[in-house]
View 1 (spheres, rainbow, N blue to C red):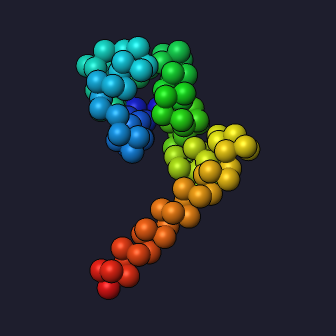
View 2 (cartoon, helix red, strand yellow; view 1 turned 90 degrees about the vertical axis):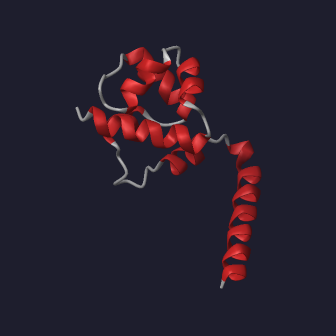
Length: 110
């Protein structure tokens, strides 16, 4: 197991979601030091901790452990897949608004 790569994936998603290390540690019921050790690849984690991470970070255990991006399973796609069907119209509106803002910003900077 490549714990350093596991830790990098966890840290990337934590930062993407805007959690501090302390906030993530609290949500997964570990100490901030242990959370740091996981992110740095110094320590592994128990199955219960992995399960809590999957829920809090909205990632699959496969992605956390193995980084399975070959099938297009990036963290963003995994979050989209987990959205309930009734939320799809809202998600579509959010994504369209985001893309329009990016395009507007790109045109402004051109």
